[in-house]
Image 1 (cartoon, helix red, strand yellow):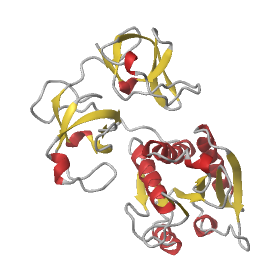
Image 2 (cartoon, helix red, strand yellow):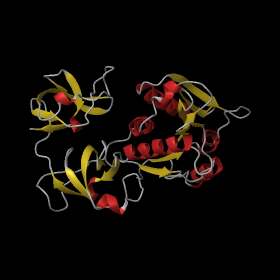
Image 3 (tube, rainbow, N blue to C red):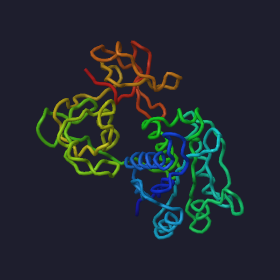
Image 4 (cartoon, rainbow, N blue to C red):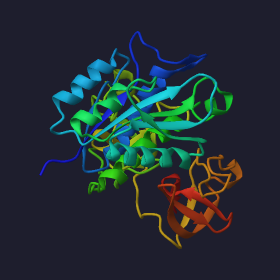
Length: 337
């Protein structure tokens, strides 16, 4: 049985910038969002097809032709845009006669709202209106659930604050992905812990490890330049079969674990309830309060030790409650001692 396939479309591109307000250029925002969506889905038992993976032209007619050509294998269509015109908040469009697309739109909107964005609701795309979007309309002929999402207004100061970093755009891309996971009922792939490919200290690659890159492509598909492979990098985060290198002052890029060589700092025992840990540099608070996303102050970082009193998932992130500071921190930002 073939795996579910998701078509991911970054709006605009090439000579078509989309909406523009200062440094906020829609074609760049949508591309980062789409790549983050694809990257998140690599942990799941599915396939993805990208409308574009770089700043190239990709008109609506081109995307519609791509979907039509592969409609026998595509199970879902996600088109990503950013808005303009002085409004505020997120909205998701679906073809007005296609109930499966409406259901998908509801899931996408719900994930966007979880990020703290104001909801403008799900909206009908239909002929004879200014919302006659080709990618939504195509759902009526292909039968494929299809939506067009607008997460934020590039010309609204409040919305700009929600898309002003790669981390925030990554979260938006992951919101689309989480909606797709829920809609299709996708299961995570089973992934074996990565081992060093040679040299360095014994153990699996972990957050805080020093590594060298040996592959040719980033996990997002772009070519890795030579200078990146000629130096070492710190692992900032691990998700499935990929590692984020140099989030704070480094290359801030995702690379497959299989393409990394451990230099030093391999993992020993996993973080679990009752163990003692230190907090890595660059860590932020988790949990469900307004403090989520705030940097953990230097006074609480390594070498200061903390005790894990509980572990659970908050907003899709596995986090540990640290007894001494009564605060949640991502497990990936902790080192067991």
